[in-house]
Image (cartoon, rainbow over all chains, first blue to last red; front, side, top):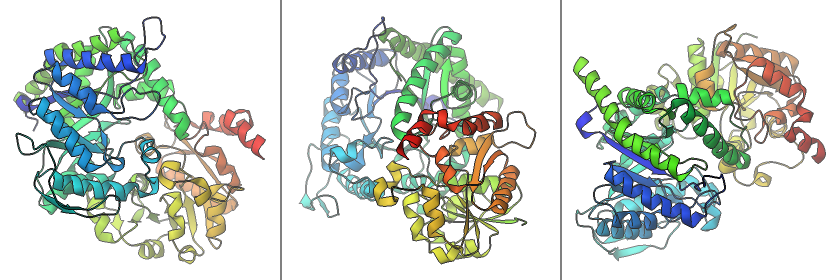
Amino acid sequence: MVNVAKLEFGIETFGDIVANEDGSLKSAAESIRQIIYEGKIADQYGINVIGVGEHHRPDYSVSSPETVLAAIAAVTKQIKLATAVTVLSSDDPVRVYERFATLDGLSNGRAQVMLGRGSFTESFPLFGYDLTDYDDLFNEKLELYGQLRQEKPVTWSGKFRAALKNQEVYPKTEHGELETYIGIGGSPESIIRAARSGYKVILAIIGGQADRFKPYLDLYHEAAKQLNMPVYPVAVHSHGFIADNGAEAVEVAFKNIKANFDRIGLTRGWAPMSREQFDNETKVGSFYVGNPETVAQRIARTIDLLDLGRFDLVYGAGNQTAAQRERMIELYATKVIPRVKEILQAKAVAK
Amino acid sequence: MTIKRVGILGAGKVGITLAGLALNAGYEVRISGSGTVDKIALTIKMLVPGVIAAENDEVVANSDIVILALPLSRYKNIAATLLTDKLVIDAMNYWWETDGIREEVLAPDSTSSEQVQAYFKDSTIVKTFNHMGYHNLQEDARPQGDPRRKALFVTGNDHTAVDDVAHFVDTLGFDQVIHYNIAAGIMTEPGSPLFGASLDYQTLKHTIDHFDQTEFGKKITAAK
């Protein structure tokens, strides 16, 4: 059963370009500075985690999330600083360790690594990797990262990187290891890999009903048991938008999420999002959109259904204004999160 | 022909979704992954209990219909002779993020399903289940006559085979828009307004009937 006292709530941004009130777009640099400010208010409101994505595309401002997180670290006290996600397949695990160990040091132990394969593929040609090595790259680098994370001398060799012989990596962290999640999109193979890794798991549910994932969580538990690995409460990441007025929230979200999905669909070949599809996602699917009460009810249902330990809401999709983004963070922290806890508490008592 | 046993090659998201639908529809279902049974046994047991995990040859030997649900770049890993005289559904598309560079997977002058049919020359290929996202396949399956029922495009060169597959699609919970030309599958490939969409019969049929007026249709006509 959900442990309400231990539940964590996060916000995540992919670094979408922020819009001005007149509809024109801010620069990437301005958009990055906006995220720093949002990290600061999220911390003041008591949100547990902020996650920043890594992208290498014109429609997103952040390609180097740890740098953004380092700036957030300097203006915050409590909030954990996560990537969402670090595309490990096209990165160097030694550099990943070094960057996060540095972030962990300057933030008093608040760094959180989220390793994933990423749903975008631009980083592969950019860093000289072959997309057909997709699985092998991730598996090999995950294994090396796992050794580095122990913060002891590493001897290792593989296909995609120079070998290491009794090599130390620095700086060492104060707590002896970096908190690490593995981010997955829900293929059965990735669930089993996550269980095998022994890391905490964050599941990206970006389309369809959360109910569909219930058997996948059973699979995670069963696989961990068979592999004799630890089981943690699972985290979920989904898109959303909150405004004071529910109807207004739906219209803003439709315009922005549709623009975002359609733009990505252009390069991937999928059809534009229909209104029917969007409405379905907001009513029973994986978009958490509406006034605080509506969103709280839907998040509480998902947390209860999947027995989660953490819920991260992805904010800012498309080109939203700074005011829309900031108000959403405020409503999420001050109205939605307390209400979700209240609903779950009442459910726990009833059980 | 009567279809009672369904075999699925490919235990990824689409393969498992179709296995679940077929099981719910009352079929005996077998599924194989790219490796040994061990690799998928737990997944199948947890996600689609009742479906039998097996290896390719066992799946094919015990099936009245075989569904290809693997990445397009890997279909040639299946020996063409394994599917001799079988009725086969091609649920695949060229998808660059999984399959890599198109020229390395496909010849430039014909559609993917034509090439799949040419490779499995002694099998009868029907293309369907390729254009709807796996979560829509799972969530939108509905009984006949349900006003919210969605439709799938079914096409192939062999009339009887297409009709048999259309009936099979019906039993899994979808209406069908039918063509008798395997090359027509191009209308539902990535880039088409039908790819990734979940549409009712009328909307799907209307788009297919007026396909040359869509942007994608114009591009294809221009390329010919």
